Length: 441
Image 1 (cartoon, one colour):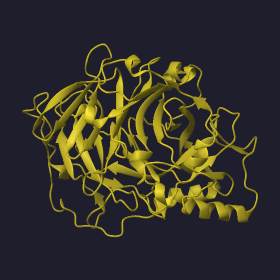
Image 2 (cartoon, helix red, strand yellow):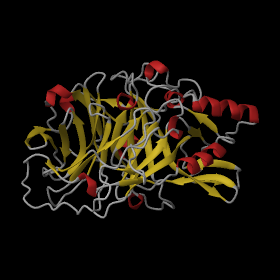
Image 3 (tube, helix red, strand yellow):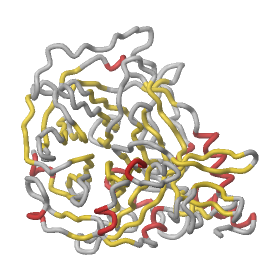
């Protein structure tokens, strides 16, 4: 069983977690931490100042979707109709994670990179299904993950999103979310939620990865515990020490990348097991705990289908958007975040989060969205036969349609090397690929 044993070692690990050094292979200052995004205090540091609420006193109505035409470009709508609120779980969840850290080993992303246990399969750009221009590299998952029906890949982000230097110990890291479809797993006794593939994608010819399970900290009586995070996880955004995960109707959940926890294996169960006096996570060796949660405070029913990081905006922001298979009225939102803490910026006495912009996308079936210098790229699964298309668009600018991957999903951009990353979800044809952004400009 994984235990620390002494209070001295607990203190050492807690101090290491606060400094971004939760074991060997943590981020360094040159790689974006501890003084990069997320700040030296990690998830526990909110922005220092609350700015005035630009929507205070207004009673906005939900923008109508009349007059939209497919491919006509982004149509600006009233951002004040889509506030979010911080559910203020940082201290409470953090306290439970502190308790868990007294009995479980705290590890870093770098530690997980040193313990990878699966091999991806490099594929030639010409073998990537679809018509993606300028593919630089691509890989498939190992055979069991390619063919498993009940785990489905969705979101992607990387160290290029999250860290100033874009790398951890010189390594390019990708994070990919997979949601659990219990209906496809006959005999399953529980919803296992979401697992994250931690991928070392430094060498395209030698890509390795390992899964960690997302968990929500809880208390079972006086004992710290955790449970699954049963969401679709259609998009990921790495910001400093924080990982944002979309929750379709419930906003953005936030996870603490500085405090992954090593748990025991050997049981298809989750949380504390009194029979063995151990913590389990459906046979995964690591869990990533939820620390924060931003929830919609709007009557307009915003949907959170995907998310990406835009560091070209001022302030930097997260871009979220809505999948809509029935119309071109799926909406896009830009959420400003504080570069020092990694948290979303709050405004006014009520400390709401107001998007810096909101738009109708004028496209349907959008699975991922990305913004760089006010240009947006939207991956769509609209074409029949599982084919995909990438739209390049902007506010008031007609969309350009570009070739793309079959069964496309989320998007991510690494500004360090100018690469656009994406992935596909098709069973037996699950690929992750990169291409220069200028190939689709």
